Structures are given as structure tokens and as C-alpha cells.
Image 1 (cartoon, rainbow, N blue to C red):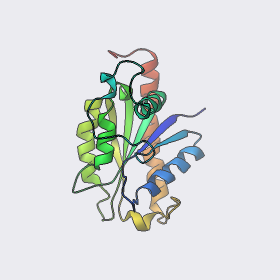
Image 2: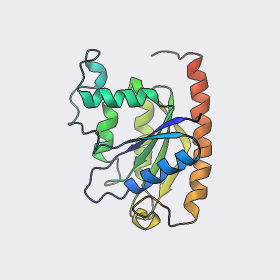
Image 3: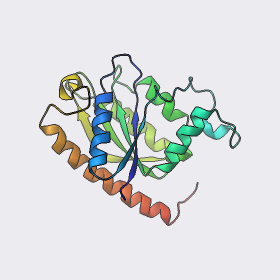
Image 4: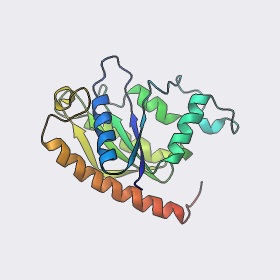
Length: 193
């Protein structure tokens, strides 16, 4: 049956490179028997945050928010694919995440970062480690950073470097452990909704 995983991508730039990483992850999830759902801010455009989803009366939020909330509630975990903009989180990703909270509760987040430099976006990952638990997610201990992203993956998301597949497999093995452990525990009840 597999797990249902949201691959949350965070860039809206015209020449975005990280979409290659998101495509790669969707392919790997499929190979593993999981269902990957791409959440792309270009496909789900949100204005700058004014009111969170939970601040709307049930059923009265704008359709884009209702659609995202439905996706987020339906998944077992999140792979957050983030670039690094000026040592931080891309604004489209942060804006999208800030709209929601309860929909993330008691689910794991795996941090997959990238950059055109050699550090692979790890500084954005540190900011995400501070933000995501505040929103109810559990970030898994390992990171999956990709440096030189434009060379590391082709346009379709196929890796050009040998280490990418083995690093991804190890990361997803850990992430899946958290997905299954937290899903099993949620089925027995949670401290609060």
C-alpha cells in the first residue's frame, strides 16, 4: 500500500533549479511503492499571509487554501524541498507553510535542501528546524542536502552524480521509519487536536 507523502517545493523563480530535486523525489517515492503529491506554490498561488486557514469558518476559506488543507491532512509525512535564499527559507515556501498548522500536527518532515553552491542549502534547513516543530511537525534528524543542483540533476530530475541515489535511499529509510511510527501512534490518539 505504501505511504502518502507531500513533496512541498518552495520556489517560484523563473529559472528555478530545485524543481529537479522535487521531480527526483517523486520518482523515487513511486519506485518505493509510495504515493508522492507535489505541492508547488506556482500551482497553488497564495497571497501574502493575512489570515491563517484555521481563522476561516469551516468551508469558507478560499479554494486554494481548502485544496492545500485537504492535501496536508491526507498525507503521512512531508518532504520539504527548500533552496537557500540569502541564508534563509524561500519566501514562497515560508508563506505557504505559515497558512497552516493543525494540518501538520503529529507528522514528520524530512528536510531536502539544495543550492547552486557547495553547501546545499543547509542554512535554510536550520531555519526550517526552528519553524516546522512550531507548526506541529517532527523534523527527522538527518538532512538531504544537494550542492551544485544545476549540475547534480538534469531537467527531468535524473541524478548526474553517483552519490545521490545512495544518500537518498539512506535518508528515505530514516524518514519512512518516522512516517510509520508517527502514523501508528496517531491511530491510537494524540494529546490534543
